[in-house]
Length: 197
Image (tube, rainbow, N blue to C red; front, side, top):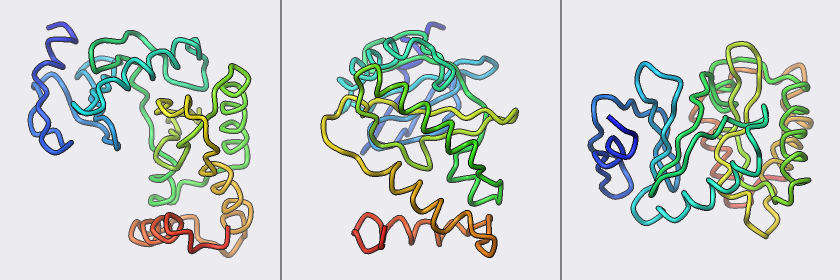
């Protein structure tokens, strides 16, 4: 079955997938889309919620300009309301914290280089946070979800994450395995601007 036919069988209700064909496996969700793996392949399909379908065109153009650089998943095609790209096996930096997988300085520097690469192409890297950065089983780092790289306002997420990393996470006494509820609590405080970062 072609990708557009698979996408046509995905059903959303209130921006939640309530049905997908058996060939697709839900692997992630965000504010504007759900991501599925085409089972038995190295292909991921990002399907935008009905109110956000136009973002497929925007993100598709960003991926084209990024030109399949190793910093990002390889981009394959853009369809109406969806994108197909490389399925990247790995865990997010968020899951690294939950599972106690150390986030090294080299990994942080790699993200810096990825964002600088995008910036040098004329983008304004935005919305780079713990759930938009993947660590692969072989130690590579990939930045995912680049749809907001075209925004024209200053997004402090990555800058603030780096500051928290340098100020707190790198200290010897700070545990590298952090309970999910505590991470969510910190995120809520951050969103309300109640953290001294």
